[in-house]
Image (tube, rainbow, N blue to C red; front, side):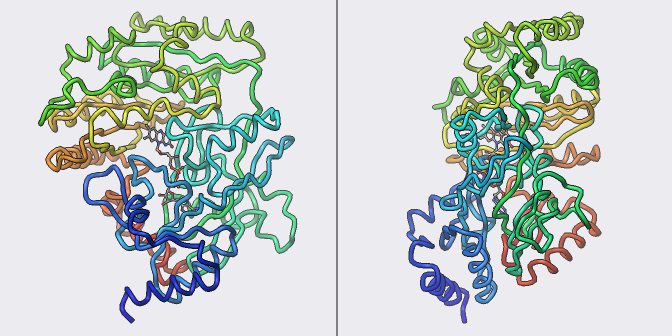
Amino acid sequence: MTAAAQLNAFLDTLRQSLGPDILSSGRQEREEYGHHTLPGADHVPSAILFPATTAEVEAIVRHANAFRVPLFPISMGRNLGLGSRAPMRSGQVVVDLGRRMNRVVEINEELGYCVVEPGVTFNALYEALQSRGSALMMSPTAGPPDGSLLGNALDKGGGSGPAGDHFGNVCGMEVVLGNGDTIRTGDGGLDMSSHPNWHVTKYSFGPALDGLFTQSNYGIVTRVGIWLNQRPSAIRPFFFTFPDDDDLQEIIELIRAMKKKTLVPTLIRATNDLYLLSSQERHPRSGAPTVAPLSLAERRDLQRRYGVGSWTVSGALYGGSDEALKPGIDMLRAHFEASGKARYIPFEDAQAMPHLHAAINSNSGRPADGELGMLKWRPGGGAIWLTPGAPMDGLMVNAFQAQCRKIALDNGLDYMASFVCGPRFARSVHAIIYDRDKAEEAARADRCYRAMCEAFRERGIFVGRAPTQYQAFHQGQRTPQVVNACAAIKQALDPNGIIAPGRYGIE
Ligand SMILES: Cc1cc2nc3c(=O)[nH]c(=O)nc-3n(C[C@H](O)[C@H](O)[C@H](O)COP(=O)(O)OP(=O)(O)OC[C@H]3O[C@@H](n4cnc5c(N)ncnc54)[C@H](O)[C@@H]3O)c2cc1C
């Protein structure tokens, strides 16, 4: 049978066994699913499937094996800047779990966790917690509120608050493997109908399997447990702004010293001017045929208008009351202002500054779309995320930003970066925003991404999360032994290569 005949036979079988609502193969919908924000052509799927239960996912995977049809699972598919909901390659069949598998299965108030299906969005969990008057708090991202908790965690996404490490707070999964078997990880693997430990401990018997299903293509995850913290009575977001680009060196040292004391429960973010302000503005010369990045004078003008400098530091304190948090704010002010460069932005002022709302909302556990405006900085909707990290070493992190800034400017693009900092490690989020409708500008964005990656790689630094278009390139940067190990696991769990061939460079 030809590939086209196999695909048709697969879709006919699904229609007959699971009903006509299981799929869409209309051209317009396929094209919408194939659209993404990265350089290069869209990846149009040959069909989209909408399973409603784990049993239906299992049936889809078994039939896909029989007809050798490659699948591409998504949850809500809001992976903007990283591939959106387009499959790895045109022709793969998207399995959209989000549309019909969207139940909050459990909220366990006492033990502090929830169990969710792939279609539960940050907004949906927030509303579920609100409507039951829950004392629990979730960790949203600064990205789309209609993104999914499950898909974001599987792609090792990050958010705010003490539970900002999203995969780190996943405990217990249900997964349909590429060979069609359904497994429960951790204590869920006990052959019983009830599993009281499944979502409360990661230290079950045997290897910890959850990590296998992050940034990989070994299975389709149909349910996860996610730990939630108690919502504090008072939350006080804080902001400091620093004037110059090279202040990042001192900022990183100051944040490291503060985070090591464990007095600030949130990650602390250092965000540059254009990352912060692009959500409020358009590039001033957007309409022109070719557009140069903003000059320093233009950036200074923008900074003045918005009351920030080259870097803005943000985080939040949690406590029993606003009064109880005041000494903490004084302590932070003494710490950062001792640099002689930091300017404190009082919370009352920050509330009136729309460009700071994304940080206020996310650190308060409220999903919001404040940052999404940056996608309109340039027309054409092009966006690539680059996410390497670095040790919390001011000299090193500042050297990275200086080198990447030069690469962006050399490629005629604005430099937009944010560093999300813990006590040891800073994850950088570089946003390459470009006009995707202009082939020449898309080519520059592509060159910029690759040159920045190379600059990091030369210093032994790897990316964290990668856009689909670049995953094979990054896998090629690893040692053959690691690549072989990934391929061997693929062969064991998905011998016919059904799930997302090529995802994260694993065939
Ligand atoms: C302005 C802006 C700000 C952003 N800020 C953040 C941020 O602060 N933090 C952050 O993490 N991200 C951020 N993002 C990136 C991205 O938009 C979010 O991470 C978003 O939540 C990802 O989409 P999703 O949750 O719907 O996941 P999906 O797109 O559904 O999933 C992500 C990937 O995981 C795989 N996958 C999904 N579901 C399954 C499954 N059930 N089984 C197997 N594999 C699966 C798929 O390959 C998919 O491509 C931002 C984006 C923008 C544009």
